[in-house]
Amino acid sequence: SRQGRIASMEVTVRLVEGEPTVAVQVLWHGAELNLNRAHEEPVERFLQRLGLSCSKYAGRQTGGDRKRAKKERKKPGAVPGQEDVIAVPSQSHGLAVGLVDSERVRIPDGTKMADALAKASHVDIEGELLPILVNPPSIVKFEAYGKPLVGCPLVASVRCDFCEARELEFRWLRQAAAGNDPIGHCIGEDRILWIPEDMAGQSLTVCVEPGSSTASSEGGVGRSTRMKKILRLGAVEEVPPGWPERRLGTFGPRIPSELRVVTFNILAAFYSKTQVAAKSMYPYCPPSALDFAYRQPLIGRELRRINGDVICLQECSFSTYRKFLLPLFGDQYHVRMTLKASKVSEGCVLLLSKASFEVLEDKDFIFRKLLRGDKVFRPILSEVAAKWPDFLSGVLPHMTTIFQLSAVRHTATGKVLVIANTHLFFHPQARHIRLLQTICLLQKIQEMREQHRVQGDTELPHVVLCGDLNSAPETAAVKLLLEGGIPCDHPDWEHASQFAWRDEEESAAPATAAKDDDGASAATWSSAPSLDADPGDNVELLPRDQWQPGRGVLWKNPLGPMLNTYADAPLAFTNYVHEYKGILDWILTAGSFRVVRSLGDVTEEDLLPRGGLPNIQYPSDHLSVAADLVFA
Image 1 (tube, rainbow, N blue to C red):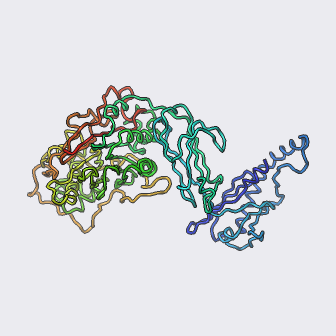
Image 2: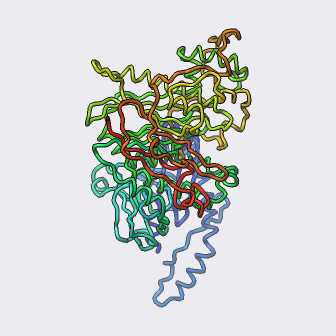
Image 3: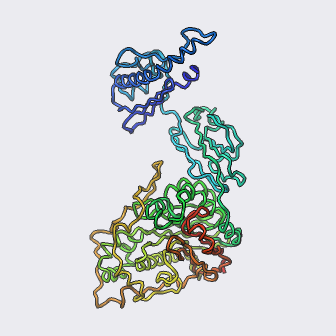
């Protein structure tokens, strides 16, 4: 109706100091006209542009409006002259448009654009007055990323201008009716929804609008179309049950007197999008199941079901961390992320239960910077740089591996632990690199133990080391961890003579900035390559007559032989993809720990019907690995 159309007519202005332009949106007779103008532009130029835009729109609409008007005139009781027809100017310069203040006084020509809009109260279009709203509260973006799946979480994300997101209320509706004011059974009133088990096949809708208290209070955000958004998410799908439920059911719920530790490489979205991934690694996985919108809710479900005290994640994007993990688990866990030192926005995330731990210290390290800059490692670097001629300038600058370390106090016992999380370099011909990375990581763990030694205690703090080490049980890196030392002539050191850096080794993923699509960014390190060292800090190569035998260095694990939490019940694999399966993910401990149970095995028979991991039942190419520990 004409009354409804006029009621929606208004002008909104985004006028922010420091932004290069003024953004103006005009809602007029069903049209949405958007203009961006310079702050210093004379107002008459803006008005002329707006008049032309209105004229063009009116010209497009007039034919249809006149036909409707003819029909209206033929209806019984129709009053001539009451038809809803937009006036079309005969002049080529467009409709007459002006700005007036609250006293209906016209803003004079020559006034700068920004000043004119700040003073004006209405836009006058051929005698119709449209109210001006400068910087009104508005929802800029509203999303609930992910496929609606039974038993899985969805997190609604909202970005506002000129208001606070905390002033908004959410409603999740089951089987909501169509329309701008959907009505349905409300199943949730938080930004997070765990989809009920009985919703398979039913539609899901989420709405956001100002809360009743803020809408009516002075200075509240108010209720308007700009502040009410609706997302229709479609029908809820059911995930086929099977071995994931059996595996977790056998493991059982977390017992408060025990310490549950989890590590999980969740397969970053951009790695699964590449042609190599789709065609060579996961050719068996349907694109819909490989899509991160499907996998992310399953990751949330897996983490909630396991319910660990310590959760170490690898290959997590910054967007997943900020928009999914933080809101989902931030109340229950201390959650922090460390981005890799690369141009790909992914890294490690460490979640520590607030009920179980007091965090004493957090530290992050970049492997390439640590090896190059820490004097503790200078003897090693001097020798390997001499033995591996291309390493210092051709390989090390490209290394993006990071180490996450946290010192925590276990609240129930008062015991101090050092927890480490990492994702070592992936290349199959780079065992020598992973061995070097493991040496550096162990040294930093030991240093943190020494720093947090409890006075008068003869024992150093306990250690839990987790991660995707990209190292199978037979490799030197695992031998160093579990047996306590590695000789300088171990065969894995010989990989140094076979490995050479190629540009494609850095990542198969597209380069992405360390920010999400809302523009929020995280502190990150410079992209590789970078020496991360003072140019004047030259590394003296060890003279050949002082070299140890072989192509490596002798090194002892300062923590001593570590405990493999799966030693008594080894897994057949933790990674299962096309043409590869093996154990790459580890939970290791040092100190007086005893393993009570570990998260069980998956058989090839379980995976063969769907080809491997990931698949429609499971969200990653790596299995989650978990163990329940007690202090011995």
